[in-house]
Image (cartoon, rainbow, N blue to C red; front, side, top):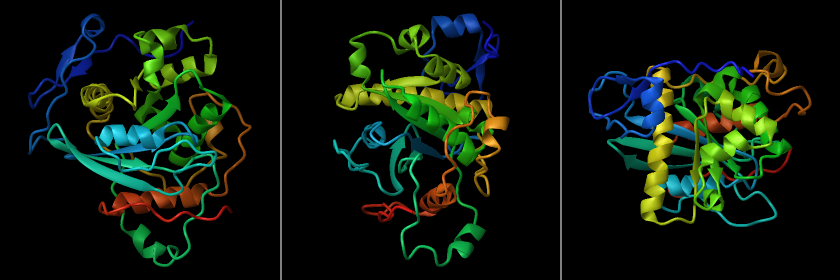
Amino acid sequence: MHLGVQTDIALPCFCGTSSHSYRSPAEARRSPYLPVRVAQHGDEGTPQTLRLILVGKAGSGKSATGNSILGRRVFESKLSARPVTQGFQQGRRAWAGRELQVINTPDILSRWAAPQGTAQGVGEAEARSPPEPHAVLLVTQLGRFTEEDQQVARRLEEVFGAGILARTVLVFTRNEDLDGGLLGTFLRETDNPALAKLDVVCARRHCGFNNKGDGAELEAQLGELMRHVEGVLWEHEGRAYSLPAAPHPRAAPRESWGLWGPGAEEGRGDQAWLRGLRRILKEPERAGGQLPPSSPI
């Protein structure tokens, strides 16, 4: 069955030079993981700060994954019956000559309200365009891709626009459960058609994270993730994703890749969620950099 994904294309190789070299599909299959190009100051089209947005349902492992990427505990992560991440948070680290800005977000399926006391000055704040994200990391637990995860992907399109899945990397937590197996094989052989289709729509940009791993394993996982992020940058000539002025949930099913039918309730908090993301993108890192929790709408 043809799923509409182009495969006969040259793939970028970031190999420590200021220009791109290309690999044939056959070369890519033989050696899919080549060293990430280290950013050089002055490289044309190379952003020095990469902004990565963590999204997913509550309990998917966003916070633990963010801590693994940052190499230190920045986001609270624990087993809880209630969502732990109640506001937008950020952390930063240096990596391969660049700065990574990692944004942790509250459950995108929940109705989120801006904390009291932050509404004043919103007009002035939004008049200044915030930095924009380069990639979205959709976090889900390996072997637990449910209807809620499908709704997360649909809500991404509702909030960000139909083009956001072209900027999305699938990040699977509990990669250790593969017990030495390959994530790519698992996804090709899955009997979950929604997961298989989402993987194809995201151009098979996927990686696994063992958030309980040691330092060397965590750095190897980050390297694999960043190869996918580099691919997204190459495909979009280094440009960040332009955030919409407002969500448009009713347009998403019609304009999307055809993955999701109607059914998810329109979230009245989508505008507040997007506004909260804009605010945190503009803020410098600070201790406990989290907007205070809010009350349900």
